[in-house]
Length: 126
Image 1 (cartoon, rainbow, N blue to C red):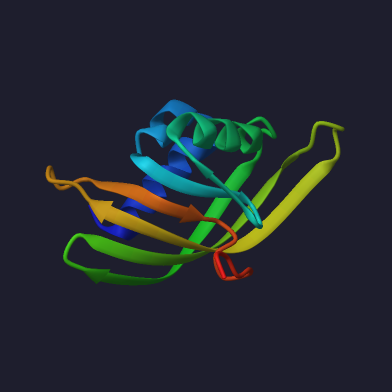
Image 2 (image 1 turned 180 degrees about the vertical axis):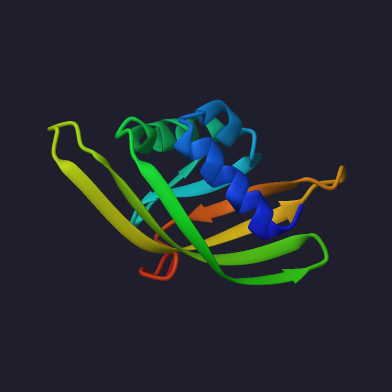
């Protein structure tokens, strides 16, 4: 599976509201930027972060803008948009430019090591 195909599968799972399938796409020690400036680690924390988006009953759309790959690591840049409903019942629209790091596993599958949906919009760790 290519990184582009992997991310298409991720979007499919997200839009189906299947947080369990999404969590299986992350490495055990993955990190996720749940909000600009807020990095969370651990699959249970990532699950909670993803669930908050899924609970908005929205739709995620992505477009892969570039992939840089070497051996078992891929850096993927995407543009994304999300349209859903907030807890107050009002429409929510969020867009971003993500930077994700994927790693190929020994069995050939890909998993997310770093998931930064806000990737190219903020500076982290400086």
